[in-house]
Every structure is written in C-alpha cells, then in structure tokens.
Image (cartoon, rainbow, N blue to C red):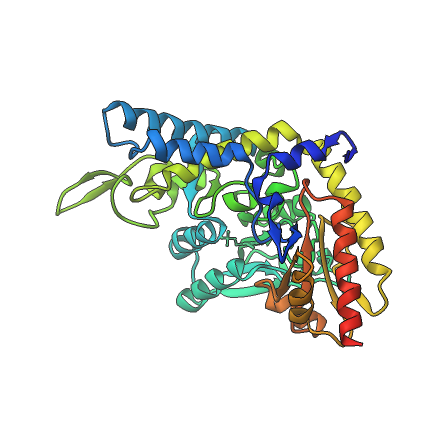
Length: 410
Ligand code: PLP
C-alpha cells in the first residue's frame, strides 16, 4: 500500500476512474497534471446529477429545479469563498478559467484605471495568459510593461523587482507557481513591495491552487485567479477573486443577461457584485462540479497532500538527475512537484512520443511560456507534473521510459 505522510494513496487512486485506463496496452501513467488534472468520481457524479435530474438555469426561475440549481450554484460560491478564505462571497466571480479572469481584470480595471505611461509589472516566467492581455492593454493605452527577471535556477530576482517598482507602477501581476519551472514564488513579499507603492497585485494561482492552501486575506492580494480543471474539477469554469473595493469600482467586462439591474434604451444600470461580472448563462454544472472538487480536496487535506507531493518531487528529482545527459530546467529551492527536463541530443517531442509508447503521459513543448524557453536558449522541455495520486512507482516508469528513449537514439 502507498501510505506515506498520512495519505492513503492506494485508496485515493480508486476515486479517480481515469487513472485506471490502459494506453498502448499498458497501465496509464498520468504525469500531465499541470495541464489538467483527473476528476474524482464525486465530481463526475455531481455533474452527471445536474444533467440527469437537476438541469435548470440559475437565478431567473421560480420553479423547483431552478431554485435548486441556484442554491447549489451559490453554495459552490460560498465553498470557493471558504476555500481561499475570501471575506465575502460577492468577491468570488465565476469565469471560464484563469485566462478569462486575467482578461477580465486587464480589460475592466486596466482600461478604466490605467493610462499612458503607467507601468505594469509581470515576470519573465509568466504563462502567456498573464502576458498577452497586458500587452494588448499596453498597446491600446500606452502603458509600459516591465518584467521581473529570474536566475538560472528559475527564482525571481526580488532585488530587480524592488528596483522596478516605483510610483509609476500601477499594477503588478505575477504567477504563484510556474507551470514550466515549478518555482513557488515569494508572492507575499512581492505583494508587500507592490503595496508600498500602492500598486494592486493580481496572483495567477492556476498551478498553486492544487498544491497549496491559499488564504487571500493573509496574502493580501487584490486579485487572484484559478481554473477548475487543474483543481480536479471540470473544464470551462474558473474563479476570479477580487477585493470588494476593487470589483465595486470596476465597470462590467461583458454585457448581457444577469449582469444588469434594469435595461431601457436610454440607460442600463448594472447588477450588484458578483453578478455584474457574470453576463449570460453560466457553466452551472461546471460550478457545481467545482464545488464537489473543493470538497474532495478538503477531504484529502492540504497538509498531507503537500508533504506527499514534496516526497514525490524529491524522489523524482533524484531519479531523473541520475540519467546521463538529462538536465532539469527549474531547480528553485521552493518548488512544486513539476519536473521539466531536457535530454541532450533528443528533442522533447521525441521523448514525449516514445514515453507515450510505454503508457507514460507527459507534456512537451514550451508550455505557453516561450520567454522561459528563451531564457534557457531551448525550444522546449519535457514536463512531468505530479499530483497527490501519483506514486514513486510511476516515476520509476517514467525513468525507465526515458532510458529506453535514449537507447533508441543511441
Ligand atoms: N497560468 C498558469 C500558470 C497556467 O499553468 C495556466 C494553464 O496551464 C494558465 C494560466 C491558463 O489556465 P487556463 O487555460 O485554464 O485558463
């Protein structure tokens, strides 16, 4: 039995049907959790129940099913509030995912409150989702994008950040955990430094949310976003957290149903928070599924989960480092269970294809972080990203598969 640091991993694995499929006639080894995570049966059941016997639209119906769906939908919002320790449920906006949440803030806050010459700071290790919306804004409004560099271990240069921050800094948006390097950034310090210059801070928690307990009040971030599908929940749903004082003064992002208070041809007034930012029919089943996913994660417990993932990370780091010609990309002291690597003389895509023949699923490419690849002067990495349902035996299979790949290319 895999029972380490309090987690009963064998038992946990039974909760995830997708872990038990075969690929190429071999048991699947799924190590692509940073791209999307598998869903426990409880999440699948919650979504199926909504479609099977509880289908209804929310907020605009008085019949039983609509009231029930609305109650479940709003319960999920309260669960998110508790999950990230927001002060109020009105600070939780449902979006399609992290990408939409960043676009929402860049569009609504950025276009309204930022002006020519204002500086926006991001980091060199951002996902494209946290680069492009700010670039679009800069082009439109004449703002200036500044970038915090990282060192060859993949750690942000905080001294450089302090030099970048000035009274011209009007917004800071950084990733909590890098999806291609695994670095856990010192976001508490970043937030404090930015706040000294009164710049609001957005935290991209797309990766962090499934590895760490998040407490937005303790962090004192002004915005934070994550996607349901990386938190063992459904695709197509995510969360934007924003401090009420910010959301309140921001104009709507999308116009349409649900986000209005009254509409006439002369003038439309907008709904209260959070509905002002939720135009149109939301992903009702997705939100309910996300609620079930958070219940599941909480039943496992972050403390045990984080400790177990650290064990997996240490094991995987040692095992992969033992392969001649393999170089780990991203060796920060503070790291989540993400192992990016290159092998000399073999393209990452070839590694991905050949380990797939052994049933091992990893991701290869630039991982939507082309500036990170440019930093290291490489086109791509192979990335194994682990979750609390992975095992050391699965890491062994990855190592065997990489060794086999090397044999093919010898
Ligand atoms: N930010 C980070 C750090 C990510 O890893 C990802 C997805 O991989 C995103 C943002 C975008 O998330 P989504 O595609 O779910 O919107």
